[in-house]
Image: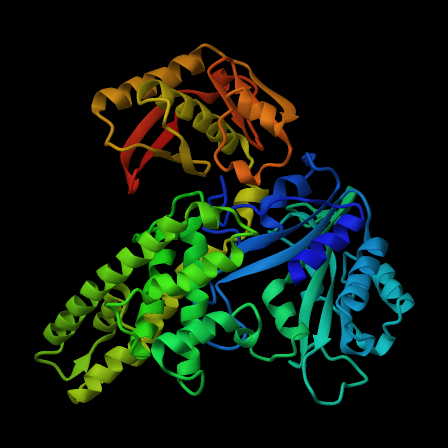
Length: 581
């Protein structure tokens, strides 16, 4: 039994219900491109909304983080990872959470006590030292010399205000050297494997901190890191999660996993796995030059560049071989991989063929840019990187062959600026989920339901939502459609939404079994993410959708609906940008 199965089984025994993994592309959260943590899809429930599965939950969640993309290639960094989590929504708290984490690690995973250490919150001017967690760890046999009290790393809050609280982090000594008697969190041989967050306070915008009436527990443990630890390897890519992928890349390339080739092989294995999960996601993401599509394109192209470095034959379906292995490996846990396998393989094949052509254009661009100069300036170097996928190393190598220098410092500055933009876009601050349920966001959320219903009337019943992005200023709505909307179709859609707004339709909510909701004709974007008991929002008799909310009480609250733009999003998917005035 692997780590995921052991974990879920253990927490089910402790009265938890397993919830399905949310898609990697979040729904109605414009602050992030991807779900970057196990807790992110649960934010509404951590904020107080009742969860249909109850107060004790557990899962394994697909996550994508690209803020450290350029660090991938070492032994620990990944762009896609799985996060194990268990939650208490106003149920158990520190005593049970810590006891169960300790029990799972020592009795199910058989980790020796002397290899464990923990941190607890030391306290500050407004919040006291976490005495309860400290004493609980002592009672379980963790000596005081292995409990470090820290401030910065042991307090969790998602933004400037909101639910917050201390956390306790659990560390494993990942080294063959003698285990130190005293735990130093700054010693890199100690690796964090689990984090238990105790949301017991609320911080106001003015800095005032008060006790929460309902306290929550949110925990997270990374599958990749913990698996490597349990299997006794210091290179995650030698663990059972990646070893078969690495072996396949070794066979295809005819190159052993050693020296400089290691980095390329790690990047190929990591990026291909992430690309498979993104392109299999129900949101229908395809390679493009914006948002999630841009990240997908970067990942595939970076994998291809490193495949070329290993002299892998681009005329062979090497990408299909690797992707097929990944699909087989994970399909029993994530059914969308099996359902969308053909789409995944097509995406990878097309992008490989297109990038090979782009690479040739990039070489011509390089020749043109360096024809009458002795230096490749920063703008040119970054243009080659950003537009043609040339890593700076390739530009430097090509330039040195011609006796030309490259403004690497200037490139590094431009790259840093680009990285900051990427980090902001992809990591976010969870603000959209935590603080984005304001009056305008709520109105736009309701308006997406009306727009979806109107498109079904005007365009046809086969129209379905494929994604949305909501801010306080506007809404963006992606939907399945095989043609550009005519001016007449746009006008009829807009008029119909406004007609329903003027009719003052009541918005009602009810809970029912998922199969009953679907049988009643309720619209649903990601059916697999919903539990057995679901929340259904009805707007008069015109719209019925499975949804987590929030919504207005009556459509008259929305104002006037205006379509600003209608355009292509990806193959078979159109996008409407609209405002409420």
